[in-house]
Length: 332
Ligand SMILES: CC(C)(COP(=O)(O)OP(=O)(O)OC[C@H]1O[C@@H](n2cnc3c(N)ncnc32)[C@H](O)[C@@H]1OP(=O)(O)O)[C@@H](O)C(=O)NCCC(=O)NCCS
Image (cartoon, rainbow, N blue to C red; front, side, top):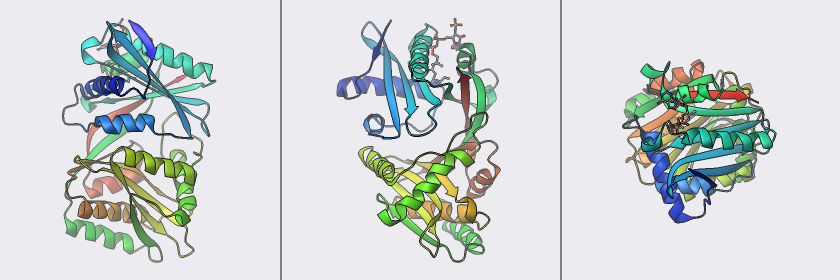
């Protein structure tokens, strides 16, 4: 077994990386969304001034059989590292995962990280004793949080979207809803970034406390560039105050080809809660995407199981639970 740093700019190697990650992540999860080669490679290559990533691979007889990634946040949460380990299903139980994890933990600890996080998608009925849990626990990780992954089949009936828009409008007079596709106006970027930075603080994250994320218009521009490179478009709906500040936001990542859209954050500024703005932005964003990108058949989202506010909106819209995303933590 040979453990090496991966050159993410090597196109041929990246095809193998994608094969291993795709096979490893899909194993036992029929019908779940998958990323294309382009999505995977461009996400890995996209510059992000807020984080550094190290990619490792394990080779057996020159065949790549496992991939490990360490994400190290640079501008905030510098006590934390996020690790991912994926092993080809045909090469499991031979120590490949252990070798990758050990090296990733070394990288994280050498960088002074004391809160080491990871996650695994697990079917609800196997939550108590799934192999991925056994692997994590064997290596000193404990469960820190459970997120529930939900899917929404499309289309949602137009009358229902109108009902929710009406319901939201009852309490959100004075806020203007604006939807942007593939670009975001510079004059609103600064105040959108305030919301994006606070999302990790206010969303329930179990035993790990996140500091406010340093989001800047430059990082926002990097995210838009990454989406474009991944052949995705960002649908962003914001609620804007009469003074021109973003009070609420909701983001969908929508592939130009392909049928799964990904719900990213939905966030209402602390001073603007209680006006049904969450429902307002989420409904308007979904409606815009459904009208403009009719090939999308499903929306994928996940929330902390204790995030009652977001879950109630999601259930109202028609999302239903499909699997758990279990988060693990090891303190150095
Ligand atoms: C989790 C994963 C990385 C393990 O990779 P692996 O190469 O099979 O792991 P190892 O061979 O190093 O296993 C080390 C230990 O983990 C535990 N373990 C791993 N697979 C297990 C299984 N199927 N059943 C029970 N325990 C298991 C065992 O304690 C094992 O030691 P042992 O074989 O001496 O009993 C792999 O299953 C995978 O790619 N999963 C999908 C991605 C994922 O969810 N990763 C995040 C996990 S936190």
